[in-house]
Length: 455
Image (cartoon, rainbow, N blue to C red; front, side):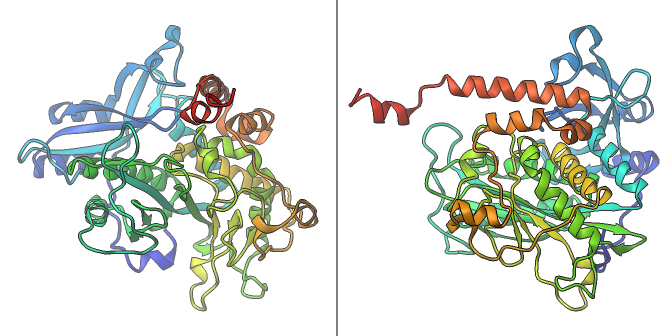
């Protein structure tokens, strides 16, 4: 964690198998959830009794990978869940009186013990090792937005009509948001702040910086906690990118930096923007390759209903400082806060698989560094108001307008294939093509309302 954040956080407890076993005994933990994800980022879990924990920590737990999206074929179905003791946390909610539950994130392995190529957590680890080979540690701090509704089906029923930073009692949504932030803190996931967002019934909780792998684990826990605590009050929380027509969608703005030898590799005191050459090449890598990446960072048909001009979500490749229409934003430098120098990628949405999203983002930035990409000038004008000729003069390119366009770009990308690995790349692309085919044959209420009376 960057030094700027370290001052606010107690030293982390080093967790190993012995620590986990002692804590389970001391806190009367009866069940432990072994958590992992499929390639789409859906959380999977197997609960084991505390008595089975020593064996699981030592040997792992076998399961049928052919039943998990993007995992093994039926003829090679056996895979192993290997719990990561460093991720052990006790869940702050209890469903059975005083019975405590905990969770650990798991790596998925081959029966031989080798990492399984289809495991999204392994995909991220592999890219983080590539950064480490260059001397870098990748830190991220995402801002995840989401909505509360009364029920998950039918016409969405919002909880409030409030807007950005509003708080007017009675306010069930704010109560749920604060309860979620407290639960995250109880699990050791540091929250910087939370607030009501722009759209009705839309909220945001921002997580404090952590290394890339820890943060991907934290994002999965965050999403689970938001939904769990909402469900306790008969409310449905959703990370759907664009649930309401005519309102802002939900993004996952990702603040990121690289550290080297304990110092922020993005900072340069002598630069006009206080950005190092490393930071500029990293940004140039993102801007050049982001059209290829959005199939991963914005992986659903609905994601592209958000990436349209006029609703604060980026639709074009540009960077700026105060410009909220920019795809990459550089927060203003504050003297004495060199360690906090960072860039903000505004395109991802909170429904993506964080392991795969962080992996392709990091891969694009590292390619920019390795190939010494040059960063163009910042754009501080509203990109949405520029005509095509002006955009071209600034070197601005449009993002894909649909999942199909995004998948076609990703499929041709050597960078995305390299970052994900052949197994995940091919399974992911195949799944997204199926999703598009299923979507394009639907007849929507819009079509019926518009065309039935006139055709």
